[in-house]
Length: 183
Image (cartoon, rainbow, N blue to C red; front, side):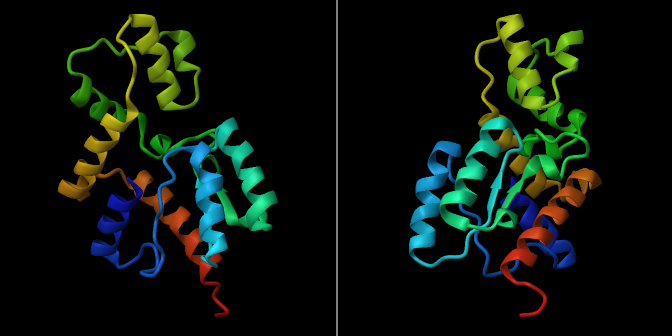
């Protein structure tokens, strides 16, 4: 999703991650520390971008303490999602936009949230709850991610402005950490 947004934003405004910055997905928080350790060991500058949920923040603290030494080098998606400090990458999209991608993947499933589910802050947790309650099986967010990535690349004008704004805020912070303005 971030790479697709980068391609879209760069093509339209020239903004985006600096060209020498590479996004390296860790494949989950359990893989982040070994990956970051390898990169730091090869003298690669690292900025961690993690979900704002409890596991992400816990690993972010370890990443800072053990490898990065600078708490500003660890960013959390939840700090960029308005009022949702536990926000995950999927939460950079408005619910309606994300749910339309879910419906594309999961067809005619009933995805109406009950009152308790509506109180859950992150969209993925909400969907996991409704899938469990309705007996729809496991919610695979990676399938939805593929649809979102394709939408961003195929119909960039359809990407919600709020999503682009959040992305630009994240990128601005990363660019500033890796290439401070006094360089």
